[in-house]
Image 1: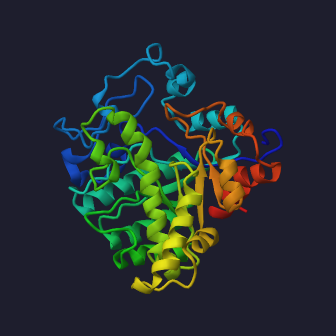
Image 2: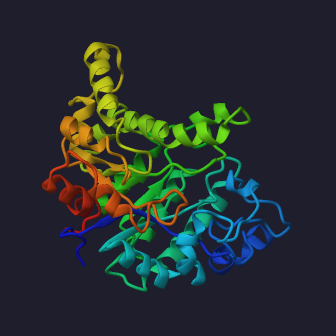
Length: 375
């Protein structure tokens, strides 16, 4: 398939998890702690609870009443996939409607992003999702690829699950949140075994913030304040990804692991030139005060090993290409989120002024194919 002459690889297409995912895929030893929900009757994520009805983890969506397609101004676009409960067949149909050749699939609302959970339970949630997604991808393994869910509660469990997901289940990436886990930041030496394993497996570490994690996050300063929904959603993903770029490019991770591939997803790309400028400037001025040696400027690590995702309507991407180049940008339709432009996401990107056809080709396919080893 080719859309307007372009092959297209969605670097971060989402799936809507079914209500019984964890009941079917978690070990029965967890009993009433296994998350479960009611069958989906409207567009949106399932509200998972424990057996006693206690919510597993709340998001902003969890506090709003369910809506029907007739009541929700965006839901009418999703009538067809909703009729199939967002199964793998509907995923392929959605890709066909958009003109996508391949999609790497990511979670929508991860349940493990909660510092109060014990590591074994958080890891069990991830294992269940990974088993389900591997099964989901069997509908069309050439077009559907999984990014495995990995928790940072315990690094040894994370390493084991990364290895299992890639070698046994066929995952092409590892999906993590960038926030500190139980007080440990992602560039601390504690997590080095996971980055070493990802480098050995030759799969990218994909940082993708989650909605309302029960973890230390920068946007929580807006919680409970006026216009919380606007402010949290404006800042959470971009700022968390900026900090993650700093951790990996300025905190020494990519110095220690020069073949590790890293993606920063669903948080815009327009901030990238400033962040790289700022890191380079500070490194030049203050490297004599730093305790972690770097052999390159922070921006050089990013150019060598990282990518960032642009939104389809983010016209400032042309400025990023002008200042950083076009080899480190990937793209996602963000299906099936309410703010996705699907099924006109690709068309939205094609309308952006100031991008050469060669740059669009790299962003649509080449850069993601290199990231995920599909060249």
